[in-house]
Image (cartoon, rainbow, N blue to C red):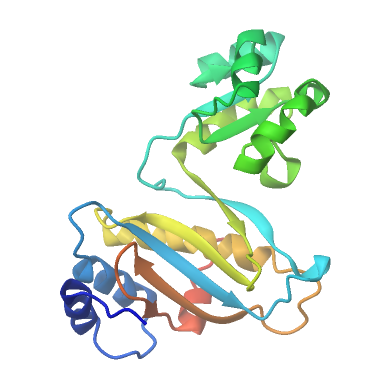
Length: 237
């Protein structure tokens, strides 16, 4: 097993022992221990009791982050007529036309979120094999298929910052909650938004508690264990 480098070991010393930390203390430690020359992402890792082999124990939701994820979010909108006009006025980076359909089929996907009105789903179905594997296909479950009157709101929320919460094969949910450069308050508010979404979306098939343990870490740094009761108390109503 490869050994960690000097900077990583120094970061571990800053964090100290492996005791579970209150969310505010953990966020402060993560910022203090970050050592990379770039603006590292602060990541939340939730270890669950779910068995993702069963459909009723899987979780897939989208959380809106009040302070975003620290990067520009480009939005593609599949809409026509009045909805397309509203999308442009709301700040959509791209609004579908025949030329864009062709570009997507040729491999282009220079956007992070795609939103569609329900009437467009049949027309863009052929793009599923191009966008689906990149996680860019509009989907009602992730709030990216919306009625025409809600297009503006959906674009604003997408640009503000959204993260998809999806359980992996080992029953862990991974989610970015911002950048090391964010203020501690902003990271905590983003964390609260993610926790609210996760706990509200607890799979019906998980009969006991959902969470087994939780950690936060920066891109390059060691994990910091979180106190579960305190973490779950961050829920936003």
